[in-house]
Amino acid sequence: MKKTLIILCLFVWHILPAQNNLDSLLKVAGGTSGDPHAQALANSALAKNFLYRNADSALLFAQRALQLSKKAGDARIMGEAYRRLGAIHQLYATIDSARYFTDLALHWSTKAHDTIGISSAYLNLGNIMDRLGKFPEAIEMNKKSAAWAALMKDNLGVAYALGNIGNAYQKMEFYDKAVEFHLASLAKAEAENDLQLIANSHNNLGISYSNTGNYSRSNEEYKKAGDMYRELGQGILSAQVITNRAANHERMGQAQEALKLYRESLAMNEDLMDSYGSGIVLNGLGHVYINLGKHDSALWVLHRSIKEFASSGSRDGIVSSRALIPDVYFDLKEYDECLRMNLANLPDAIKENLTGTLRDTYAQLAVIYKAKGNYTRALEYMEKNIIYRDSLDNDVSRRSILRSEMQFEYGKKAAADSVKAGEEKKIAQAQFKSEKTQRRVLYGGLGLVGLFALFMVNRFVVTNKQRKIIEIQRQEVLLQKAVVEEKQKEIMDSIYYARRIQRSLIPSESYIAKHLKRLRAAG
Image (tube, rainbow, N blue to C red; front, top):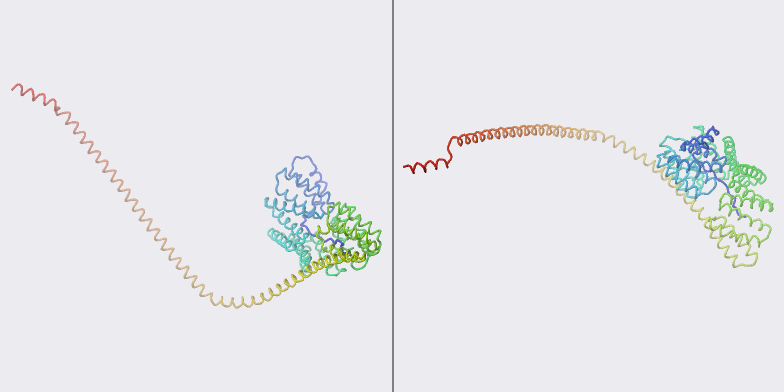
């Protein structure tokens, strides 16, 4: 029997306080005030308010918030709107779209220097990495979110990141670490009296205890979370918790209680028009009906599940529900129909890389071909079953090795800390003995620096004084030069003046020559 029941694990988002006055928001959001900034803010707040109540309505408000924020040119609200769209697509399980919008949210929040937006975007990216099975990356993203939250002294933001880190450890099967982080998150939430975070922490603890086989304690935590989600008016989350409780009862062999809870969750998901949530519940119901031998009921709910998953765009959900249908025909010994449906679903299971589904499908095909006497094909599919079974076993082994390595690292760190403490004590004693010498060296160095400073000051004063003397002497030289030049000018002017007088009193040479010539002629 294939174990393909989808168990929904809750991922937490950093949720801002709920808006009380919905009428005012709706009036502003749909008004004609002409202020796109105010309208964008209102639509974003409404998207947040409806996020866990009616995802389709939240989507419409988020899309309008994005359009208006672009019109207003407000990068901060654009980042917020993209963040809402990313969170909505996480609920729809369209992870590629969720990552696309969340990357845009981080870009615009960073551009707007919106610290809250950056922290929230990293938190949502951590959720997405978790959904993709990239748990180390999820832890890294949440560490960044916690760092930004701590920068703002946002204790609740840190608490949300702690809860998400607990989720990542949960998926890596570090159950003790998961419980540790979820309890730490719960303690911070209770200290801050944040009902949303308290509910999320109880839900995450429910998941951790469920995976350790402590189903009774798990359902206690789920019950607390569900009551709080109802109080907060978050129907989608409340329905998800009931689905998880139903899965616990199925594991405990309590089929009737599981059916009761699955039906309750289905009614809630249908009222909320949550196709993905309905698909999960119907998938679970199909699994229970198969185990009870109610084949007609199983086929009916599984076909409905496929339609709901198709409506929500969940490819892996479709393949998972289709993979359960051949089990009905296998139980009825209708091997031809079982064979046909397995072969039809096989390419999609390979495309979606559903390792567990492929393992069980190949095992079922091997049994059918063996029953038909086709031993060659039976051997072929049995070998493929072994490959995927070994792949899953290797994954378990790798996680086991990783746990051992981490435990070894923790032990080594504790031993190193003990040795370090002893060494630090010795170092402290040695430092105490060398303090006097260090002080003397310091004081001596300061004295030398002081003397050098005095010398430099003295040289500066002397140099300035010499510079002033040289400047004075230069000015005196220039003054004397000017005096000499003035005297020289006066002397030259006197000479030129005397020469003009002499020239005016003494006859010209031509005049003297003329008269000498006349005297010679007379003589």
